[in-house]
Image (cartoon, rainbow, N blue to C red; front, side):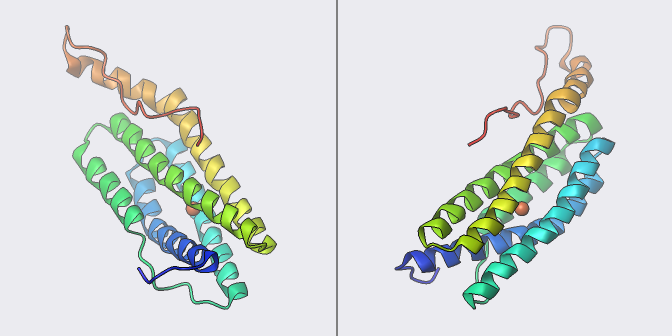
Length: 188
Ligand SMILES: [Fe+2]
């Protein structure tokens, strides 16, 4: 990473990181939708794909205003989150359990993005860049909404099915297996 000395440079670096993260996600989301068994889960992924395309445009708008290029940064964290999700999906045959795992992986991605956009929003505010603040807030709202939808799905549908599906496999004395236990109501 190039040397960063000012808040302007830090903000630009954050926006570049988010830009690369979103573009990676545009490639990953259709694969996640395809891997989902539940129609509702697939819908959430497909809807968030459309939102993500727009989120990339919002970031491009910010670059345009700053008269900067969006390129030059690779989001290693998103690469790792997507790889972990892929490895996990490939390791699970049982469909309901895989859906629970997909939700857990997607929520990790959303929380990462919420955190990244949250910092970028605060820094844009500090720099007095109201247009960037507005654009980031629109995206932040969508990310939180997507996270909540995943949360609701995990709690109401998938977790239940996954737990039922793994009861038999756990054997007569085995404890009830809980899948996707990471679903939480709280937000950072
Ligand atoms: Fe996003």
